[in-house]
Length: 235
Image 1 (cartoon, one colour):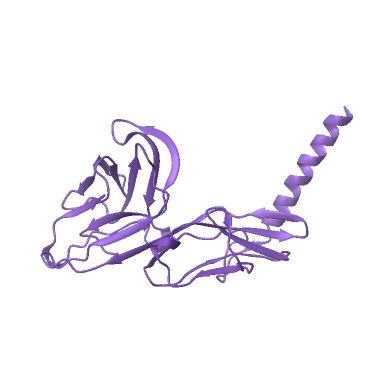
Image 2: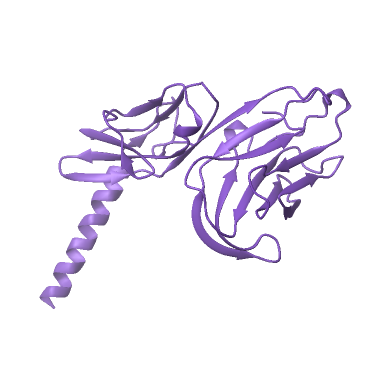
């Protein structure tokens, strides 16, 4: 009984520390809820991306990229200067109070570039996202997979990518230009979706105002930033 009591005490103490510490979380923005995590970032290549978190009782911070500590990144915020495809990944922070630490969620950094298509006058958007090693299965498409990349936006940034109907554009596609054996999937804000190998087309007129996209891998999950090309979509 003594052993059981001691184990329970350790568990309850650990939970109490985590809850008390988490309640002190605050965001860098004003008028924020008391508990917030670093937010996903999507910026144009060459722009700065800022990850931010604060904790009132913290006496130390350590930012990490893909689980690896970043040299000198020991403040409540971390700025990725002039973000490039090599900076794409997942950023998290260990927040310290004495010998105790609490990890934040891992927030993603994606970068994109866009240029005018001379044939349509619309900006194709090339988005570079961080691959995730995770196995699963969804019907016949994408079917079984061992990894994926999620090309999404935070709700504050629009949730997804909006079709660009300017200049009479009627074609909206998402394409993996790197491989021929991946599955590309779209999901609309209103629940419409579809999946296909290598490239997928959103019907015209689009049912939803914005769309999220995913690329699924059946083998050899990439370790570096992976691109999807969105034709006919706003950045």
